[in-house]
Structure formats: structure tokens, C-alpha cells
Image 1 (cartoon, rainbow, N blue to C red):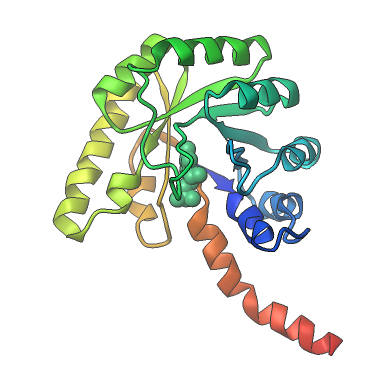
Image 2 (cartoon, protein in one colour):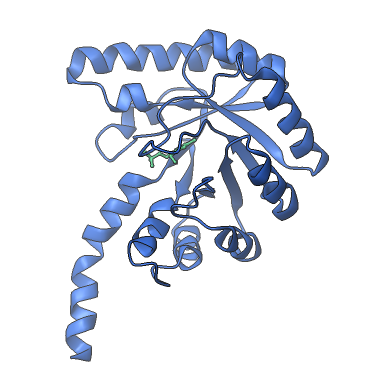
Length: 236
Ligand code: PXP
């Protein structure tokens, strides 16, 4: 059974809609941790649209399970990561206008910059992973860059239209997992996984960890709604 990393970015997205103080991602992280998750994942985006530097500092203090920071190779974010020292950093591509991380890193094209960031992270004792598409070329480049672990982007599988397309992207994912395992890499996966499409991916032998965010936060708003209304009624 793969480990579960829970991405809590969208707890902070809800907070930022009102620029307020709730819901607090640190509070959420402690609930996620108590519920049995294996790691907490946050993405400190360059535009700070959800998680802020302060959140990361507080999470580093309160989270006892693995804290995995998704980050771009931007100098400003690398500096913060090296200072706060999460347990793991996952390098992801980042475009300002995107709604979510659209694809994996192009490791081959950005090789020099990625190597430089990996060196800085290593100096600080931060384990590093690269978020890449399930593609042999990217897996080869990740291996050349010297990482010990990668996270495969499951977006194509998750967004597939119809069974045939889903089967095709499932096979692509499965063969990428096998290819990366043969190269001696630890393999994680994530993006777009939800309560309907996760079981098949969780069964792929060799995937050590799944990172899931949006669908868990969405489900939380629904399964928690009844209690929230009852608590408000009591106060009124
Ligand atoms: N893994 C990585 C590297 C990501 O960038 C994201 C999205 O922030 C996820 C996993 C989780 O994706 P989702 O929110 O769609 O579950």
C-alpha cells in the first residue's frame, strides 16, 4: 500500500478568498496528521496565492510527519526552502497564470538550473524529488540529475475522457513506474487523483507514495458540512 501525502494548499485557498485567518493550514495539517496521513504537502507558489512563507514556518514547527514542499527553481523560493528546511522538496514547474501545475518539469531542458538547485538543497540536508511526466526521456534526465526519487504526474490519466483513453494513460503510467524502478529510483505519483480514480493507481506495484490534495479538501467540505451547521445552530 502506498503512503499518502496530503496537499493542503486549498485550505489556504479558502482563507485567501477572504484574506482572513481561517481556515488555518496549520490546524488542517494537525488534523491530517492525526487522521493517519504519512506526509503534509504544500506548494509555496511564487505569487503566494495560497500558502504563505509564514504558513511554511509554522508547519515546519508543528508537523511531526514528513513535510514536503513543492517549489519552483526560482531563487527566492530556493532561498526560503534552504532556510526553513522542509524534510523534502519536490521541484515542480510553475506558470503564474495556470490554475494548477499543468505538466511535469522538463528536466532535460532545465538541466543546469535543476542541478544547481539540487546541489543547494543537498547542502542543507533536504531530500529532493522531481515532479515529471511519465516519460522515459524525463526519467532518464532525472536519473542523470542525481535524484533518488521522482513523482510521476498522473494528470493525463486523471483527466482522460472515457475508458479507452484512461486505459492508455494508465498503461503509460504503469510502464513509467517500471522503467523508473529499474533505474533504481523511488517512485511517487500524484495530481488529479480522486475517490473514483485512485484505486487503480494505488495498485501499481512500485509506487511508494501518492500525493493528493484537491479532492480530499473538496470531500472535507461536504462530509464536514453537517457538523459545521449543527455547531452554528447550537451557538444561535
Ligand atoms: N503532486 C504535485 C507535485 C502537485 O503539484 C500537486 C498539486 O499541487 C499534487 C500532487 C496534488 O494534486 P491534486 O491537488 O490535484 O490532488
